[in-house]
Image (cartoon, rainbow, N blue to C red):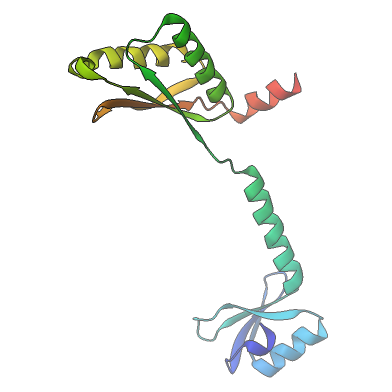
Length: 175
């Protein structure tokens, strides 16, 4: 920018994007000073390097606003983990599925872990049936992201929240 540019000649571009032409660096700096703008090198590898006349402070400010907006719109997904046993009671299953429903409605992913103990390990079908039952219980708010798979003495499955179109989300908030 300005005095840090080392090329002898530069191609100057006006603030509106039109070409001014190839000028000596001193002429380009004088022009920038007359217009009360900065001379910013945008393509240093070109022959001759391309420099643009712009208000650099204003440009940096606009970039920071764009970055802030991008950060505001991005979401961080958190993974909640729930553990169950193969022989879970009906009431415990209802509580677990209700908790899962709440987590998925909040936009969090849910990882289920079923620990097999003793002879339960010989019947992994029981664990798969239980995980399928959970997926079916919360199917309106979540989908299976990672199918049930066995890892050592445990079986895991990941559920992700259902993504709705943006227009329906806005209409839900308005009503």
